Length: 120
Image 1: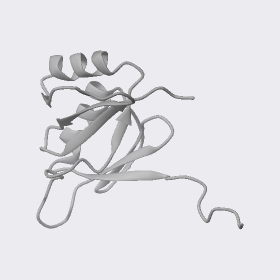
Image 2 (image 1 turned 90 degrees about the horizontal axis):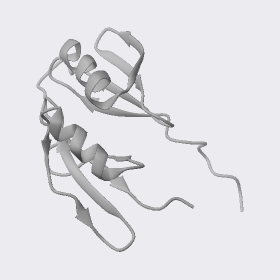
Image 3 (image 1 turned 135 degrees about the vertical axis):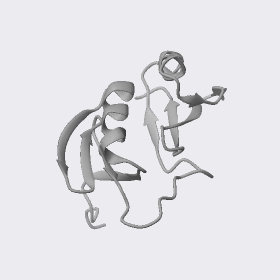
């Protein structure tokens, strides 16, 4: 069998309505750090995979039906509590035998996910 074609997911792109407003929301609310900002793009350090915010040239359309990604939390109850305290729209935690998860919305209405499962 040959080696995998790709080493990792380098970044995940999230559309935002106003990049200047989104950067502090993601850094202050989620604790990410700004890697770089150029034009309509800003890359944020978010653990092992970067998050790149972008402000579309045309019409803005948030992720509303399904979260395009999950952030893994080491303490899902604390993540839930902190997001609620920060004023994010946060859904209830769903607890299953091997995984717990919930969705929340950023300031532009993007649906994003949080999950927890025991890491081996």
